[in-house]
Length: 144
Image 1 (cartoon, rainbow, N blue to C red):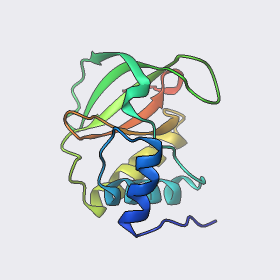
Image 2 (image 1 turned 90 degrees about the horizontal axis):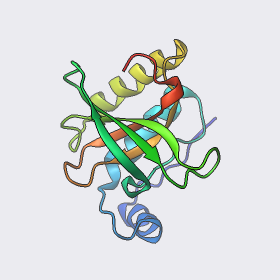
Image 3 (image 1 turned 90 degrees about the vertical axis):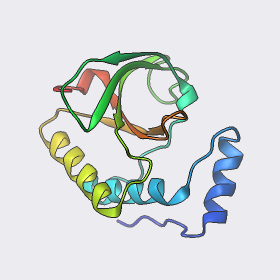
Image 4 (image 1 turned 135 degrees about the vertical axis):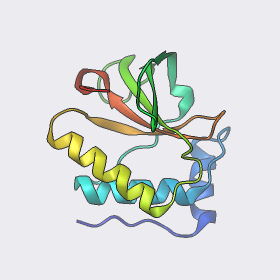
């Protein structure tokens, strides 16, 4: 099962500008994270979710130094329920992820998935901090 990812930044930027014209994103980290996650989880693709699709974002206190957690509502969620409750796991200092960082994130998500603790719904990006966000189903969020 393979995943074809264009390495031409122009192709990626054009695709993003068509879908998310008001959003700015460097292509390589997202491509790499998606590629690592699809390899680890053996799924076809983890979708990009525009940050503007979330509302009622509320911080959740936690002791994890790697994540900032938020409750949110995913408005216009395409395949399940209108206004789906989700957890946003913002990866601290993730605007400049390395390939090794991406592998660790993918491995952690795979480990959590095997324990039925998380169901990853997609990836987003905080437009203020530029940190990447892992979007997790609230019902399967388990131990935040």
